[in-house]
Image 1 (cartoon, rainbow, N blue to C red):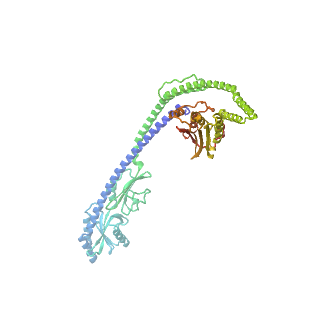
Image 2 (cartoon, rainbow, N blue to C red; image 1 turned 45 degrees about the vertical axis):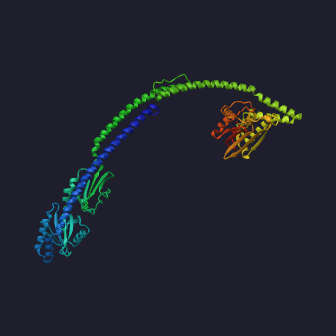
Image 3 (cartoon, rainbow, N blue to C red; image 1 turned 60 degrees about the vertical axis):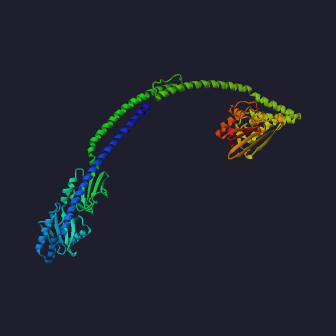
Amino acid sequence: MLKSIRGKIMLAILAVTMFTACSITVVFYLRAAGMIEENYSGILYGRMQQTVKDLDESLKEIYYVDTRTAWDEALRENVRSYISTKNEDNLETVAELLRNHSREYKDINSLYFVFPGEKMAVTSEEFPVNKQGLAKKDIQKLEEEQADNSFPVVVESLIHEGDSFLSVVQKVEDDNGNVLGYLAADIKERTIYYEYLESVNDEKITTILLVDRNNEIITSGDYSDLGKTFPGITDNDVPDENGYFEENGVISFFSRGGFSSCGLYLEVPKKEVLSGLSEMRLFLIGIFGAFFVMAVLLALWLSRVVCGPLKSMTSIVEKVGEGDLSLRTEVVTSDEIGTLGKEFNHMLDYIEDLIAKVIEEEQQKKDAELEALQYQITPHFMYNTLNSIKFAAFLKGEKELAGLIGDFVELLQASINKKGSFLSVADEIHILKKYIHLQDFRYQGSFQVEYNISEEAYSCYIPRLILQPLVENALLHGIDIKRQKGKIWISGNVENGKLTLVVADNGRGMTREQIRNLFDSHAKKTNGLSAVGVPNVKERLKLYYGEKGGMKYDSSSDGTTVTVFLPAIYDIPEERRRN
């Protein structure tokens, strides 16, 4: 199927449509999932911040109650009295005062006063009212906690063995700054959990816990976490600051109170947040299926519309390839395929015309070859005859005449010979001197020629017979032969990779119109010996060198100067010298 253009078009349409539909579906799903996740996280984090704020306010109230109790003058007086007299009535009074203060705020579980020297604690509880025989290390730990933290910390209960409480510890001093003891306000772990954390928790949250300023867990949904250090209990990274982030498919939330520095941490699996997208997935799958059906129908229709004319054209092409050029494809549309059909028909018309021209040219070529064979003897007859005359003159003592005939034969060979497109400047000057020798004999010494060619210029290669037409033009149209004062200067030099050849005369000059007509005319045969005129020189320079080669005429009443410029080339491939 893929070998046919119809199959490729169908596959391309299906691929593009499916890719587009899949991309739109994925983008839509990801966008919806992102919005759901963002909305859920934002709402949950807002509830979490409010809970932390409420808890912070509660702990602040407990702190204030603990502070007021610590500075209660009646409490301090009874503590001092008991330390001095050991009167049990003072302990009863202290316990009653603690009960009264504990009722000031609902979240306080108990208040108790520790006598470090007596290793005893008096509580606000009904039982036990006081606790004797406290361990010295426990009292020291309480003192250390108070020295390091005035805010709530998790401490082991001095009253109930094995229990831990979130406590606010205050140091109680007399007026002289002497330590009378330590006052602690306890809050039960379950009270905190049910009062605050339970309102945040929902079925999607897998981890919920509260830590103190030292990251020790105060309360959690899992009792086994109590007292452990956070974040050692979780594999996920915990935010260093308030906020939430996603990693490894888990969304983590963290918020810490400004007053108490207690922090609330939550974990929610992302898949639980996005569990409500199942119906949307089914909806998107339905849309994807609808796109697929539409793509198949569209591909079938377009392949038929596009491939029908192409199939017809392919059949015509196959028959044309077998040699039947009379067939033409039918053009039924005005689109690109219709244009292709029209151009194909035009191409067949052109091929038929071209074949006819080739047949005609081949016939003409055969006729020309036959004619060339008939006239091939003519140049050889001329060379042989002239050479015979030259030797006859030489034998009779006419050395000058023999030399002139030899120069004419050599010049005639250079002019008629079609082999060799390039030759050196030295060879060009050699041929030119033969021509000037003949013209000097013709005009009986009426002009002089002066050469000034540099050695570097002699080595350069130029197109054959470039200078001879320029000298011939100077003799025919420039120098006044009758005045017997004509002079021609021929010079050549190389500078910056550019060869410049100059032919100048002291003749009567040329008008601008004459120069323009000379340059604007096409190459044609002239009356000169070489049958190569000035326009031919100009056209060959342009053909061989483009913009890098050319010639210019400067003329006045004092004479005419022709400058030929072209690249300085010191070597030409052998085949270009021969052809």
